[in-house]
Image (tube, rainbow, N blue to C red; front, side, top):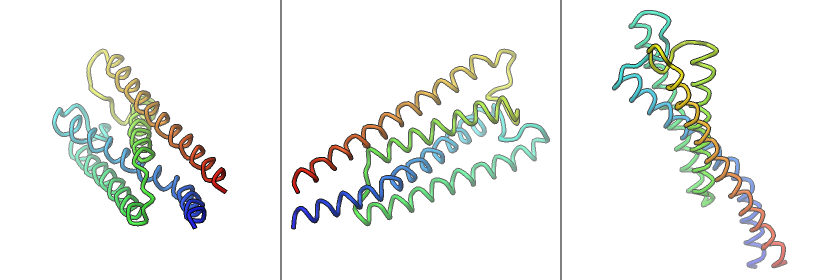
Length: 168
């Protein structure tokens, strides 16, 4: 009986590996967007989401950006609630997703939105290089932490799989 439960739990856990990661990714994306919006857009007034037009358009774009971050966060919490209800929530893997999602958002923002699309800069100063460097290095560090957590949960999963197979 214990063997069957272990096998069932292992196969179900494998099914929900991606959902734990997805919930964390959405939460990390929403969290990074919320921090960006709150700190850099509203408190410091360094930029708007879209700075190529009037202040009014910039504020509207900030509102849409805020709604996007809120929807990502809420979606992640629905997935998380489902995982907890089914008892397949894996905190360490979820944190891996959070870090990966936050870092991915920040790197996308720093490279695509700031440099390629040029819809805004971090801050409008003469020498932006230091701001860009800190922004993108922070993003890479967050991504690496996320990858570390995700990789370690994958190793734990395979180790657990081996233990289940040994019991049989």
